[in-house]
Image 1: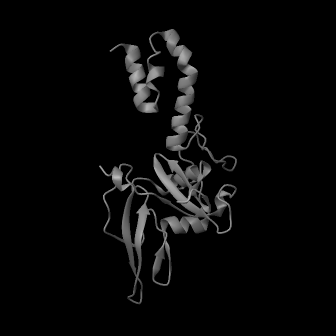
Image 2: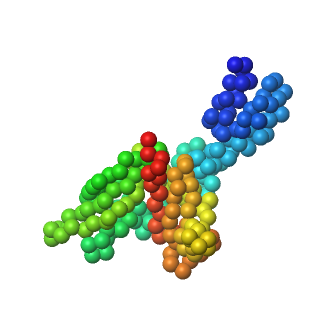
Length: 217
């Protein structure tokens, strides 16, 4: 295998460069010729997989002075969404939210095998001070190795590239949206009555990762 074949192989495996483009890499002049295409391919891969531009800025707008190039921006979510995702809440004996297992008094039961992207599902239970048990039949969880900052970044990235969730009859839903981050499909809702296509991130009321059982290793 020539050096250029090796370069093409790495480009195909790491950044998804097409095979026909790789076949054009035979000389240094060829490499220079395809450089703009490679640059765009890299930019697309970085945007789709980690939600950053080549300069290191996030793909969504952030307050001035917040961005730290090539690091995950520590841009907090609105308090209600933060509580919903990381702590959960309840209505009487029904648990709501809780999509990142990073502590707290909620017990996870019947955890499924994580899929290829380490998303999993589990039942939730929480014993109240009076001895009653609040529960949720099923909740999906972002990968345990993601920090809270990455979960917040993932939700913002998915929302930035969102599309409306389509019903079985082919019509788009009004308030439900979906997007991806690092290959994880993330769905959510905006406040009732809002159009997800025009809503702001502050309108997001919930978001969760979609478990892919067919992709279990």
